[in-house]
Image (cartoon, rainbow, N blue to C red):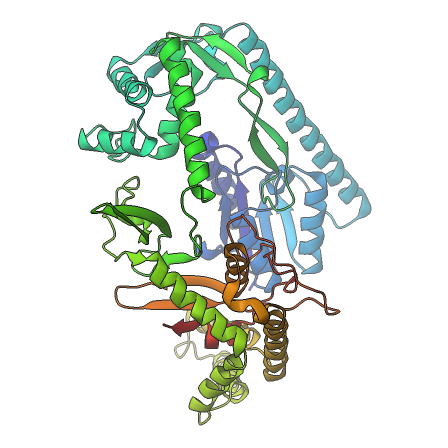
Amino acid sequence: MITVALYARVSSKSQAQNNTIESQIAELKHRIAADKHELLNEYEFKDDGLSGWSLEREGLDALRDKVGEDQIDKIYIHSPDRLSRKSAHQMILLDEFEKAGVEVIFLNHKTENNPESKLLLGMQGLVAEYECTKIMERSRRGKLHRAKKGCVSVIGIAPFGYNRIKHVDREKTKFEINEEEAKIVKQIFMWVGQERISIREVIRRLRDKSIRTRTGKKVWCPIIIWKVLRNPAYKGQAAFGKLKRVEKRERNKQKVSICRTDEDSWIYIPVPKIVDEGLFNKVQKQLDENRKRARMQREGGKKKYLLQGLVVCQNCGYAYSGAQCGVEGKKFSYYRCSSTIRITDGREKCTNKLVRTDMLETAIWEKVKNLLKNPEIIKNEYHRRIAENKNDESSDKKFARRENQIKQGIEKLMEDYYSQENVGDKGYISEEEFKQTMKRMRERLRGIEEEKKKVVDQKAIEKGMNLIINSIKSLYSSVKSNLEQLDWQTKRGIIKALVERIQIGYDQVEVAFRIEEPAQDGEIFNLQHCTGRHDNKSIYPLELIKRKFFLDLLYDFIKVIKI
């Protein structure tokens, strides 16, 4: 039996909402039925509201995965530009499908496996790419022209506090003040401009007054408040061209990145004003002051926290941050869960405990020093846990046994099914039962293969452990003479290099250490302080540990050490 699939795509959200993708699917299903094929629901792939300029689409990726698993014989697509808008991408995908032995059928394009057909398809792809680029450029130029003429239709959605009054003639589209929303906007500007409160305090007051967002949410998002306070439309000058598209950065998955433009390049369009310009400017100064104060606090202007960015709450998953409080004239520093004070997402506050900074930082530093002095505890812990499971059946034997059982089951199923066909007995196993059972068995085989890939070779683990231990020994030898007198930045650098995270629970603290590969050729490390937030792809202060790799099995064995 031939297994067929269909793929459909629309570019914009409006097309997705107008069910144009459903019309594509209906046409494809009609053609599949006309070709006397059966389409299973699991082989229906679609991407709603996604651009054809990028190959990174969920539906397309799922289709390619199935093709790679040899589960599809034919693919039905409405037209080549539904597959991709870029000619080069079309060629990549069609070549991939052809190598997998999959036939691609376009409803509006006759496909033949010859040079002439491929040339015609490539030319059609180039034409589609050209037309799309031309439409985008015309749209951009048209918006720019209307913006210079003062037409608000180019702004899009009206900001909170305004209603968009549409007109058949787009140049006559206008913004009209929404009196109810405008009262809220004025109140927010007064709070920040006159009382000089923070955005978080604005959110708290809105919540206490039961004032909801335009979409009916009980809790306002900080970025929404920030956009309201920064939007010049409220002083009567709606801005066009605040954002622009640029070529994607190396790590960005999208085709383009969106960035903010300089205010000098904005085009201002007159609209009814809600607040006067004096109050608006006062709010801008206050926001700049708030940002400066927050930056100073983040950079340790008042108090430096040794474990900042590493501590997380075991209860709710939010980060712990440093804070200070005064009791009877004395100041105390502590780490607290951000969710104990955060109310912007509408969730209940976390009830996890505060932790004194001096107590936690001392305990963690002692753990780090112990690891520096005794790196062999990594190997000891690994071998101890291996010994606990020494009586278990080896992974290789377990995988082989499970694979043999499934393969024997497949052979028996095929033998029973085809033997009943030869004798004309159709009552034992139906065709549908045979297909479903075969599918389940093959999925189980693929699952075993995935599990086997996750198992790390014993020798690789031992080698990795030795590299890690030697790295830690080299680090210790360079600082041991001054270990008890290290300055704050050096301690911070060592901790960030060796500690992945610190989890605070109700009655315990857990430390997860990093496992990293040392630099080659005996490079000397550098203990410069790194001010950026840590993540698994960052370059950390220790140049000795340059290229990171996580040995999953080893990491699982030693990652948690309780204190």
